Picture (tube, rainbow, N blue to C red):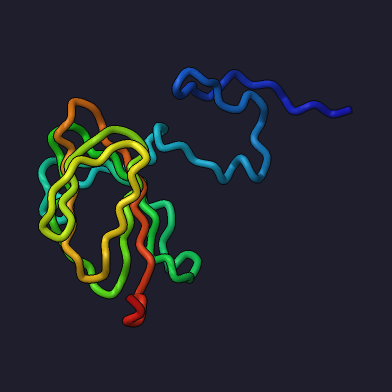
Length: 148
């Protein structure tokens, strides 16, 4: 019986070792945010500081009603500036950390597990006013064709 060749763990994240075997075709498609995938973005939508982001999905790669899926990290003191979109719905899913969300003129605290839908043409922004990183998933569905 053929056994996969044993390798030393490539790296560890959150105290767990990654694959210790040679990657097959499926594992070769898997990437890890902590291995250099996040890129720096300064002044996102007029926000403060430099955040880190990775676009995990783009409409042109696989046409669907989803415009994009981004994984975003806001270091302490950074923000995504207040902005509006057109006929689409952008949703923020807070994965870790906490911050201050602005949604249609109302400001409130958000934290791990919060799901914030931003309505079409609505104004929204997010600031990390905490001492740790704020991590979130951002996805946009649209255009909606006026079906609000």
